[in-house]
Structures are given as C-alpha cells and as structure tokens.
Length: 312
Image (cartoon, rainbow, N blue to C red; front, side, top):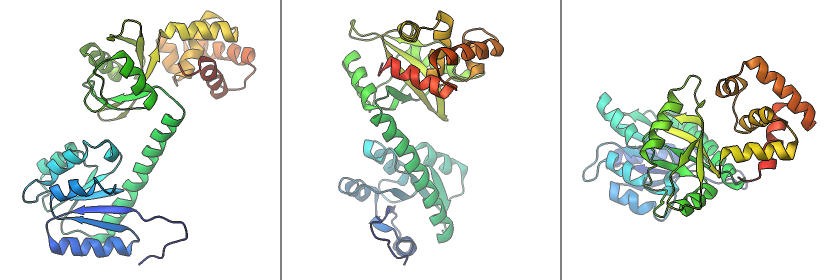
C-alpha cells in the first residue's frame, strides 16, 4: 500500500456493485493505491451512504437487482453536493445503447468487465483531477462575487454562483436552482448564440421578471460542454454599463463599447462582428483606450473596466 505523507488526505471512492468478487478485487486495488473504499451492494444503500459521507468519485455497476445503476446515478445527481463528483460506470456490456444510457444518466466514463485495475485507477485519477479543477474554478467564481450561471440548451439552470442565485431569487418568486427553467424566448436566444459563427456574437437579452422594479439581462459568454452554456447576469441595462465606463474613464462612446465587450471576455474578432467594425478599426480603438487608461494591454484594460463597473 502506498505510504501516506504527513497532512495528506485520502480520496474516497464509493463502489456500488452487487458482486462480492468484484467488490473484493476493487477494494484491494483501490486501497493499495492509497484511497479509501466505501462499498454499497445496491442503489438504495449508495443513496444512504452519501447522506453521511461525500465520496470523491463513484464506481457504479450498470446492472444490479432492484434499482439499477442508471437510475441510481440519476438519483445521486439530484443532490447538489454531488454535482462535481464523477461517476464511472462498470459494465460487462459493450452495447452502445447502454453506454449512452450511462452517460445520459450523469456518468462521465465507463469501463468494461473484466476490469483491468491499472486502467481503472488511471481513469479514476484523471477524473478526480478534472473534477477538482472544475470545482476549484466554480469556488473561485463564487468567492469573487461574479453573477454567473450555466444553463442547458432548453433553459434549465444547471448551476449559478450565490450572487446570481440571490438576484434571480429577487426577480422570480418561484426561483429554485434545482428545477428552474428560463423562459422560451431565452431558449431561442441561447440557440442562436450557440449557432452563431463565431459563437457569442448575439446582443444581450432582457429577462421578463416577476418584480417590475428589477431589470435583468443575460449575456452569452461561452459553451462549456455539449449541453452547458455559461451566461453572465446583469442588473439593469448593458447600456448603463457603457455609459458608466464613458463617464468614469473619460473615453468616447465607441471606445466605451469596445471596452465593455473586452470586459465581457470577447475577442477582437467577436467585437468587430458585434459592433460591425473591421478588426483593424477595433485595434485602433484599443490603442486609444490603452493610452487614455494608462495601461499596456487588454487584460489590464479589462480589469480596470471590471473594477469600474463594480459587482454589477
């Protein structure tokens, strides 16, 4: 067994399988790799375990008596705390239909039986690393107070930062991150943003809110996955941001437009298409912006714009 270093914590692997032989083999291999193993013989047992202990990764047998692995995976993914935990399916089936079902249920990968321990451990390490990177990025977004959310193509809110959730809670009386779906016009807008070449050149869209005193807009940022889109939430009008930049930083109307889109993370090519300018003209505006703001590059200009806009 790999020796533990001082201060090092052990990764926790939850194995869900009804085969004693498979459980014994996996337990030995995973513990020898320096990880802690939790065992569940059926789906219901796995659901009870995660109420007490949060695993770092889950290995799920696809076909089990009672609640099968696919349904167990769907139920596990309903828990917000497990959103970032990778689930790997184990199956003796090479049938494409079952592989697709596992991925659609929320799994990130699959291994076929008989299992090769070395290959399985390598996959576990890769998915653990990816999950930690994604979770760290999400935590950083939360800590810096960004009004960000991700939705599916059909408008279902997949996750949002606490700041965005609070603002949406004020705007929509029935807002709940677990099952909230944005209006149909947002779904159409989202489809158009994703289909644009290059993507994300669409203008922001107004959200119809329940509270008349709250005006919200969504800005498309990027596509994160096959069905996950990152959006920024703005309170007020994006034009208000532009006016604020113009007044506070003493730039022209057009320079404020360019600077605002830089703050939104757009490339020069994107900005040229959004504002119907040539890329060379955008470059010229940027040169003037750098000179007026006393900065050397677009990163510094974007940071100054974000600070000027505050948390809006």
